[in-house]
Every structure is written in structure tokens, then in C-alpha cells.
Length: 350
View 1 (cartoon, rainbow, N blue to C red):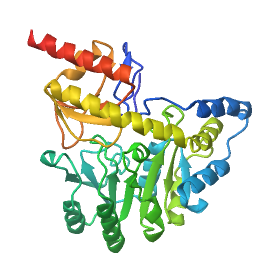
View 2 (tube, rainbow, N blue to C red):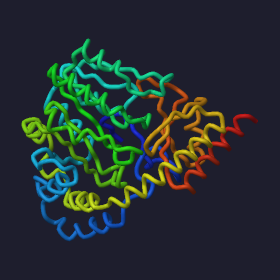
View 3 (cartoon, one colour):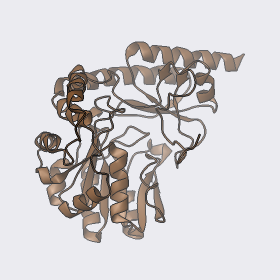
View 4 (cartoon, rainbow, N blue to C red):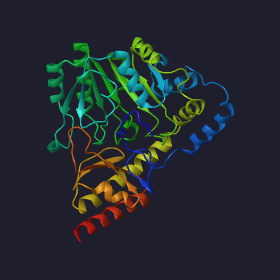
């Protein structure tokens, strides 16, 4: 079997006997029923090529985000748009946070990677020190994940705007990944300010919010139409399938579903965090549907023996062995996880 690259992410449930997957941070309720019905209806037209310009979906996104349609570019998942951005801009140097999502620097082939390390003592929060590093290093592009992955924390909205202002002044591209923002306790999206900062790009996806990881659908937003045109040339024709386009348009109508999801996440995140702390783990604060925690090495392997998969975060820059990330899921699933973790800890003591 051949692999193009090492899989650096969670969600690989296709080998081994995985009964519970806590390694991928998708909506605990899964895909809304209205979206499922839209996918099934779309199969009637799947014999045709998809709309290469995603006209219906782009219009729905523009209305949902309150931006012009010319701001929107759709892709086959957020990852495709990250690569399209990197391949269209070809930055000579990029600055990213550490720890953060692993995919930003991978497509920036040959670029100097500058990392802004977040402090464990400060719960890995983004602070104004990032401004000093941008000013000193003057990278071609800055990547900020907001809320950050794997920490689950949003950045201060004023700090993000100050970062955008600095990047605009220095001629730096600012790429803001907001793929988890719709699941955050407070929505601090930068989208309403995009018209003032054409150097900025916001990334969003349907993957996490609507449980559509297998559909592969994301979109980017920017006031720079030239950038979107260059990014579009880096994607394949017909890259967003007929079912994906219909699923996205249907998902944007699911506002009550998202509110129900956020309510569940807040309650279950607090319960999960308390359970882990009672078992002796260090649990870092989060505002979304996943938790970063710290304990002894080897937990992932022992849980896999019980059919439970969590995210080993030792390969994140700025972390190391003993750091783990878990999704916040439904109450009964969270109970099974904490029971499995408790059993592993008891076994290690004997």
C-alpha cells in the first residue's frame, strides 16, 4: 500500500476495531437530517457534472455571511483551499502558531517556517507578543487558527484586528482559519471586517459544524478578487460534487441545529473536563467541541486496545508526549470514554 504522506490528523477509523472515535472534532449530533435528505435528492442529478462555479452554493454562502458573492470561493474541504492559497501565493516565509493545525506549512514548499510558540503556563492563549514577532520577522504570510486547534481557544477579536492591520501595513497575507468558529461559545468571526482588510483571507468549512467530513466542503472569503482568481486556478475543475453543493446550501439553513449543538457542547465539555481532572489529568480551557489535556504517555495505545481512539498530540510543534485531544460527543459516548480512561488508569496502578 502506498501513501503520499504521513497522516497527521485524527479521524482514521479504517484500520483496527474502532468503536468510539474521539480523535476527530466533528458535530456530536452528526449530520442534520435536512442535509442528509438534500444529499439523497442530489443523487438524481449526480449523472451530470457539477456546477464548476458553485453558483447556488456561493449565493447561499454570500447571503449567510453577508458578503458579496465575489468574496467566495468553494473547495473540496478546507484542506484544498489551504493548498490553493499556498500554491497561488508561493510565500517565501510563513509564520504559524505552535501548537496549531498541522496543514498550514505543509504546502508552503521551500518556505522558511517561523513558529510563534504559545505558552503552556498561559493555557496556550494567543497574546500580543505575536505582533512583535511579525514585526521582527516580516513573513510573507501569517496563519492563525481561530479557535485554535488543538487548544480550543478563540483569540481576542481586537488582537486579530490589530494583527490584520499590522499585516496590511507590512504587505503580509493574513490567513485566518475559522473552521470551528460556528461551534464556539462566542462567535468572534473576522468576516464582518474583511472589506477593510483585502490582505486577509478567512477559511470556513462544513466539516465540523455540520458533521460533513465525508462530504468534503469548505469555502474561503476575501475582499481580494485577484487572490480568489489565483486560488481558483489551483483547484481542479468540478472539484465540488453535486451532493456536496446541495448539502452545503441545505446546511446553511440549520441555525437551530447549531444552537442545539452549542448548548450540548457547553454542558458536556464542562462534565468531561471535570471527570478528567478528577482522574488527575491537567485539562486546558476550551471554548469549542474538543479538549486538550495532559497526562502520562501511552494513553492512546491503551485506549485503542479498548476500541477507543483519541488524538495523540505529541506530533504538534510546541507539545510533546503526554498531550492528548478529545472531541466532545454525546453524553453516553463521553461516559464510555471516561469509563475506558478510568479502567486504563486502574490497570496501570496494578
